[in-house]
Amino acid sequence: MIRLAGGNRAGVTTRVDLFVDPVCPFAWIAFRWLTEEVVPARDVDLRVRLMSLAVLNEGREGHTPEHEKGGDSAWRPVRAGTALRRERGEPGVREFVRAFGDRYHQERVRPRDAALRAALDDVGAAGLHRFADDPAHDDEVRAEHAAGQEPVGDDVGTPVLHVEGVAFFGPVLGAVPRGQESLDAFDGAVLLARNPMFYELKRTRSGGIDLAS
Image 1: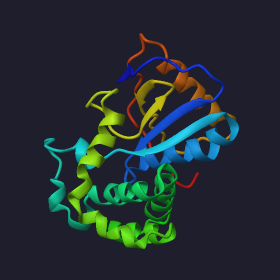
Image 2: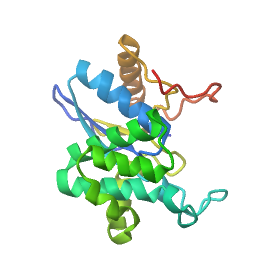
Image 3: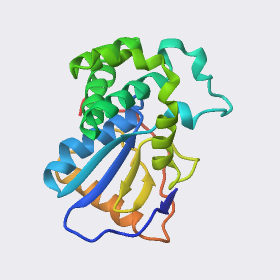
Image 4: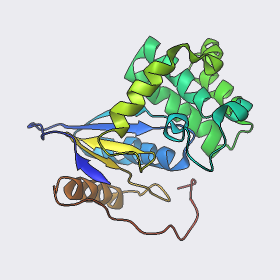
């Protein structure tokens, strides 16, 4: 689902907000696509922000309650990332998403808590691991999640992209596109999203995820 979230902003630089849950492989691919391919080749002001699969899936049939997952709870990475954002702002979030993705998705460090500990250590924030099980700032997590999710509706997941006041779910990519292909994907997604009569374009995934690209 794609829905307008406000007017377009004039100017040369394109403002892009990417909302991710670090545990989602599709969010990780979108993060790498934007940071490694699009930002170096486009005049883009990218803000990496956190959303939460734990919040998204609350009360949904078929989903195991997060409190039953222990160290694998999806609450834990976003709580730690939110704590880092309070200390370092958006650059801290970007550092954390990169470090956690490298450990969890690329290196396949398991269990998830081991990847979280390693990622926090990588960014010099090992002491923030204590916030992973601390619900004191969950309202902050929920508010940031809502900022990303509400403009696109509840029937989508992560990643969510906001481009110059336009919000949409995805793109869901099976691998990181490279070179001109990556820029074509970005330009095409933005053009479709900015058409007020366009709502959805989807096909069933037929292959696996390639995290090595």
